[in-house]
Image 1 (cartoon, rainbow, N blue to C red):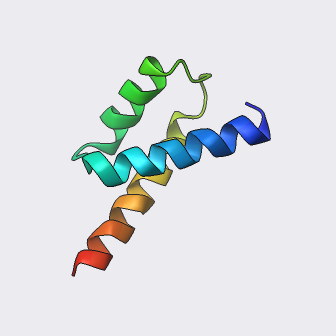
Image 2 (cartoon, helix red, strand yellow):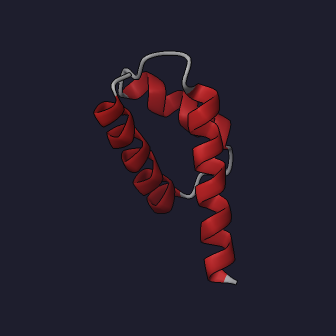
Length: 62
């Protein structure tokens, strides 16, 4: 995945995480990768990104 495209995917995933606040980050990323035809091999990295974003959201609400 190219750097520019990779950053766009990360930003898009962060935004979708803020909107949907998924209960299962792994499942959310798996569906995102399938729906948007993201190159394989990035699921773990993207799952960590979603988990980090959810932690940020939870800490800002408290």
